[in-house]
Structures are given as C-alpha cells and as structure tokens.
Length: 339
Image 1 (cartoon, rainbow, N blue to C red):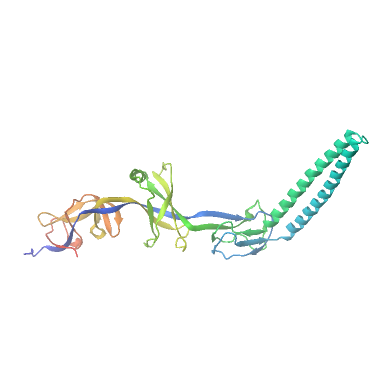
Image 2 (tube, rainbow, N blue to C red; image 1 turned 90 degrees about the vertical axis):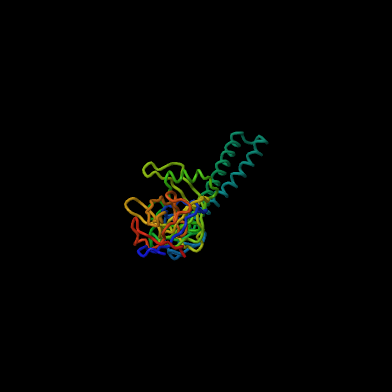
C-alpha cells in the first residue's frame, strides 16, 4: 500500500538513445555579397529610379546622372577622330607617292623617310583619337547607374540635384546586399572546433533558431572555417550559408546556430526535469529506499524537448519529472510511470 505521506511523482527510466551531436553558438547574419554603388563620373544627379529597401535584380536602373556634357564631349572626340583619319589618309598617299618618286630617282631617300615618319605619327594620332572616343563613350555609359548584383537596396545617400564627384564622399549613392543566399557568421570554442574536426563529419548541416525562438525551416551548410584561434576569446570563426528566397532573414539579425555533426548514443531527460543550484545542474532520482535523491549531472545540448546528459546518470535509473518543488533529499515518494 502507498505510504500516506509519500509524494506521488511521475518517473521515467533513462536509457541511451541515438541523438545528434550538436555544437551551439550565437551568430549574426550578413549578406553573401555587399556592394557599394558609386558614381564613376562627375555630374548632377538627375533621377532615382528605385524604391529604397526593394529587392531588385542585377541590371535594374538605379540612378541617372546628367548626360548632356558627356554627349557633347563624345561628339567632339568623334569629330577629332574624323580629322585624324583624314590626315592619316593624306599621309598614307604622300608616303605611297614618295615611294614611287624614290624608285624613279626623282627625290632622295630622305624624303621617303620623312613621309614614313609622318605616316607613323598620323597612325598613332588616329589610335589616340579612337581611345579618346572610347573613353568618352565609357564616361557617357557611366551616367546610367544600374544594379551590379541582385539584392536588397539600401538608403539613397545622395539627393536629386546633388553634384557628384567620383573621388569624393559624394560618389557613394547606395548599397546593395545579396540576401539569397545569406551568410551566418558565428564562432566555436577551441575545444568544440577540435571535437568537430575529430568527428570528420562530411558537410555537417547547420540549423538556426531566430531571436523569438522560431526555428528557421531550412538547413544550411558550412562554407568557411577559420585557420587560426582567436588568442583573446579562444574561439574559431565559422560561417554557414542558407537559402533565403523568402527574405525571412535580414542582414544583421542575431540567431542561434547549431552545427549538427553526426549522431551518438546518449541518455536524455526532459528539460523540465533538470534543475540548477549553486553546485550546477541536477535531477531528482528515486533511490533504492523509495526516497528522493538529488544527482548532479553534466548537461550537453538540447534535442527537441530533451536535454542530453553527458555524465551523472546510468541506464535504468528512475528520474522524477514532476512535483519537483515538493522534493527534498530523503522525501518519500510514490513513483508512477510518466504518461
């Protein structure tokens, strides 16, 4: 018969089971590419063609700089090229004529040398004029500022009507951040990193939990592991990549990252059964005499709603999972199987 003063408690018998090996850390999201969009020519900013914060594709128009000065310069350079081409044609004809006259001994070799030099100089002048035309065409193309990558636009740094200068602070127009895929940067302790390497897990997956406790639905993969240990913190920098097509993650968010590196056999107990005092974490057991017994444990990571116990429990021991506030060392208990 039950002891009248015994506390009725629910218990589970702990047995080892296969659980994932997880290394937890706090991380922060960042764009997989971050680009500063800058003006490459001087001029007046005439148009802003995007809405700040929009997700856009590469090649989408962002800004327009005043074109007229560059169109005029291009016309001038094309006219200068036409002049040099005409001079070059004359120099070529003079050279051909001089060759014929030298062959007939009507002029000296010096005249032919002078004609050849003039033609060479004219050829160089044509090449220079062509390069100036190309430079003018390039400058004109820079008046159209388009998105260099797909991503999320930042705040416009310059107002319409501002005078831009390519080598000054005014050249910065906005920023673009690629958020799909998005990166999460975090760090593991030196011991955790050594354990991860020792397990030789191929392509360990990374799971995220957002600041509000919501799990991120997609798993990521490691794409960077540091080659040095931070001497101050004793940590190794890591980075994981996640698909983010729905923009659920934004750069700068804090998240909890968990590197899953295979499985191991371990004892687990419900999180609610684990308590903590000045000596650390502990659980209540049903002792051989039917009384409550506190047992210190070494806890590992969470697995779902359970806590992995690294040390302190043996298979078959009965862990109390409810009515914990009524328990004191030596309290008589009446155990029943947890539902």
